[in-house]
Length: 341
Image (cartoon, rainbow, N blue to C red; front, side, top):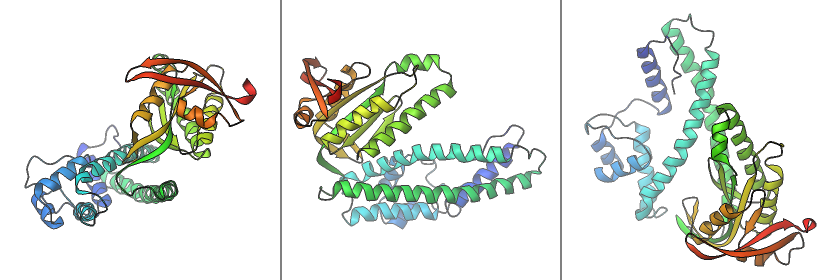
């Protein structure tokens, strides 16, 4: 987490880094690979697999002391969830990997935020003695990190509460099937935009896209599955809300005259739910409809069209079926508000 500042002794930076790691992890390393496995009551191979699945490297020297007491307790916790049947034995590595990937992205953003704050606070501290500088960085970290941790915990709990409401009555497995509307929205001409915009302009565009998309999805009782660069993937259980959501994305995300346009595609049906992500033919249909849509329009599949045909809020126009990769006959309908007919 240490901010890199020109002119600062690398040995001091390494010391600050070690101090911060010890503070975050509750103490210095005290276990090697065999010892942490023994502490958790599991085989060395199982412990190593879980550690790597979470996204961390193992020291080439198996006798190196690299794990803290918190690491050992965490290993015991995840294996305990398996022993209690909460996570199936066959899915513990996948569960660890999913958790690690999610937390890694969050940590990268948080560390960027915290480091920027520390650098700003130290901008006028060039004349500080090394020990004074070290103490100031540690003080700033101790002030900021608990606040970020508390906020993160709150948001996680709030999402758990929201997800519980959506999933009550569904199978309590890591993998399950649910009938939902899956949607994608992507920015038209994104590749060419990256060559025209400087990093600050591109960041501003993506921030507007992600911020507005997330707000619209949440407002319509949906949830964002993931965002990947120029595309957001979302889902909802209501056909009506899915249609409203898609149209609002087109109307409200990009409103400036020189903004790019969006393409949106929706499909309804059973999906495989796996560690928070969605898979299956419905996801493939929604993705193909998105890539087939004209800029500024929403395309939906026949299953969703059937659900919406009696909804007076919307107008549907059947287009000629298309053959796309993986689908011999893709039925497609243009979705508009009824007033636009």
